[in-house]
Length: 95
Image 1 (tube, rainbow, N blue to C red):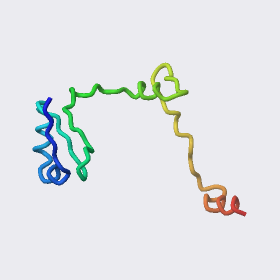
Image 2: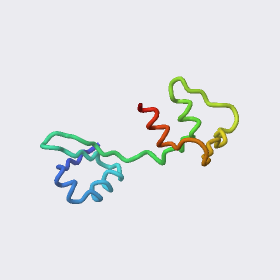
Image 3: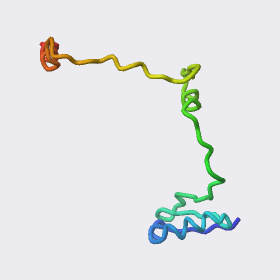
């Protein structure tokens, strides 16, 4: 496979042209930084398959996927006019 090399300045001047060239897949496209190859552009093989939340959760070490639908607990916090204010409680806690 042939290789086409661009400097970072050449790539910055017309990135869409370089990306379209890499998408064709006929040539390997390499972008250099100060004369050293830094990035190789290759075409994507196809659209990525969607990943479910359950699959991501299961991939985390030590996590298990719960059986059934995930349901958040009902909201149980209610504020009333009786008792100390949050600011009073915070001040009391800091003493």
